Amino acid sequence: MQLGFLVDLHLCMGCKGCEIACKVENEVPLSTWRLRVKYVDVGTYPETKRTFTPLRCNHCENAPCERICPVSALHYIENGIVNIDKERCIGCAGCVMACPYGAIYIDPETQTADKCTYCAHRIASSMMPACVVACPVEANIFGDLDDPTSNISRYIQDNRDVQVRKPEKGTNPHHYYVGASQVNLNPLASEREEGYNLFNNITKLPLGGHH
Amino acid sequence: MVHETLAATNAVVTLDVAIPDVFWGWYVTMNMWAKSIGTGLVFMLFLLLRRNPEEMKGLRLSAMIVSFIMMNIFLLFTLADLHQPFRMWHIFFYPHWTSAITVGAWMASIFVALESLMIVVMLFKKDTVTYDKLLFWTTILAIPVTLYTAGIMAEATARELWQMPTEAAQMILAATLSGSAAIILLGGSKLSDDTKDFFGTILGLSALMAFIIYMSEYIFGAMKAEEVAAILHYVKGDGEYATMFWIGQWVAYILPMLLVALARVSKSSAILNLAAILAIVGLWVVKHVWLIIPQLLPLS
Image (cartoon, rainbow over all chains, first blue to last red; front, side, top):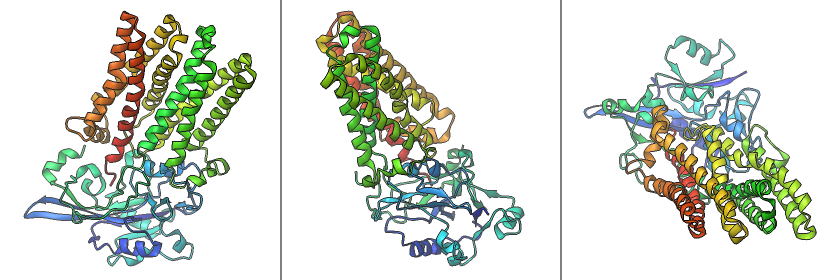
């Protein structure tokens, strides 16, 4: 079994329900996110549109975070999930430096690395991840990539524009997008201008650590 | 290439709470800088032993103690950089051997143990024969110890700027640069003019080669990879780290090269010492800039 995620961006409306469900389910501390939805505005007024891209750990088959972790705190479990043992983590931030998707953060409460685990604890109880349950438009498709009859496999078969983020990194992500453009997937395809963020004055805790 | 599409798409990120802050800051710079001096001194002691053993007399103990201190500074900052420093022992009890961090921690620990042994041998027994035998093995071990940080940087998949084998070359050159500088300063009048010239040459050539590599990346890096181009913007033009980058290049490489040449012509130890001091100070700046800039690029 290899569990994977697919987000149909045609359906996503940026409600952030998944983000909040994840926060609540996993008790994610303030200023940190296991899953977040990126907004990118495209075009020039009045011809503008807003795109939404949920971003989470890609649970790579060839995970750089797992490889660089000095104590195997980040490890694979049998269903393909890259899980984290927070009791073992030494907080070296090697995984933060290695993850090309910026999906790992240092939990300010435990001072250990943390990230999306595809809600491994829920899956162990035969439940869907919290973000899948919360999505009002079923934009999150979750299932077994090894099973050709699973929802996710059929979705991949039926759609020709299935993409992953940063395929050139050779990480083989188990997280796919349908209906994505470069603006959604490539951080260099959009500008980040001071003063143009919806939360300009957002308060950030010093997550970079103690120095 | 996607940034060329920006003019057409006018795409602007309006909401993304990406992970903020630089995670590997100046603690890691201290780590790399101190390790370069610590391992570099061992390389230079070994070269001195092969080249002119009688000049080792006053340096066996003093140079090894300085190297030992620098290695302990390196270990201290490594430990301090951990968010859970009291779990450091996990590296030894739950080692994950695909990680350059694990391999490095083990090798550095053995290296420091060997250095301790050499200090004990000299301090209490004045046994130069055993010391010199141990120096051979310590020098062999110093090579991977100084290189392993390059391995960590190479494993940091997200940071396109840090490539192998470039980082490995820079780590070795940092060791020979700072090691030769340190032994010139430590040796003082104990070293003959000929030996000073020799270490001055190592200093000058290390500076030249490191500078060539940095300039190669600076000029050509952007031509192969879009992410590298984006990162190098931080050290070009009015980039956030452009001034610091050039201060580092001048202080660590350009000025020491010129001063080493001047010292040879004028046979001046004072000028050579100045070159050595500048190289050691400048190396910190150079390492810091190269460590920080890839972390400024948004990953999402």
